[in-house]
Length: 338
Ligand SMILES: C[S@@+](CC[C@H](N)C(=O)[O-])C[C@H]1O[C@@H](n2cnc3c(N)ncnc32)[C@H](O)[C@@H]1O
Image (cartoon, rainbow, N blue to C red; front, side):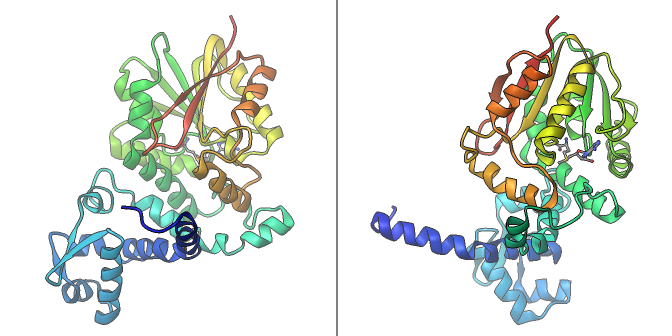
């Protein structure tokens, strides 16, 4: 039952918001200290501390906070995994979210500089898409793979995006190729190609090899601002790419994507698609600040995408929202006349 007056609930919400970073840090520390695997099939705080060489008292405080936040259960002094932590936080689970948690933990110092970014309007790190440091590129690309796999966006798209009649797919800014792998598995006749930057593709190659999909997905190395895209496609897929670019670059890229299509082909944009006020979905408005900190982009509204697509010679887009929760994004699908 929800207690208190509307004012009291409003106060509690504010207070929680102000301290919400502490709960995030509990999760980040637990993943970085590999505590979920240490709890495994059940353990006391002393056993976890010994297994991970941690201070016993401090480890118990962290485990207690994890139990309070429903990341673990605690009974008679023993800790156990919840169904959710077993599925998403055990490192050997196929739906492990750990890559995304580690990336978000590494983004913590950037968020400390939010006021600086708002004052100056500039990203607080070089907006290099993590290409300049192989370790950063790996963390970034494996984070995308982990989030999409854990949540299931790839399977949802492969099952729900109508692909009949499509023979050739180009995924621009594909990252770990999670989506084309799912689409290739669901549609054995589909020819899939991806286009991305070199440091990203070195990780993509590893992911494809580990998944036994190297033969199904062809890779093109390039910068979509300056290098020609391959052409003759039935479908060009752009997932979580445009939010990293400013409005001019988005428009230029959509022109290039339109040119990469056969007549009658479709561009599919997958992203947070914002309302006209740029406030909903909530996650999209907050994520725009992550883009402020690291890129020249933000999440864009459906009215902006519609105008850019039509300026690129495409038809007015139709929208398919992925069910929320767990998803928070939509597909905008726009056809090239002909
Ligand atoms: C946020 S990730 C999205 C990955 C994937 N599409 C997904 O949704 O999981 C953005 C991707 O765009 C790629 N990218 C960014 N700038 C690029 C550029 N100028 N040329 C080619 N690829 C680029 C990055 O390397 C990265 O793989």
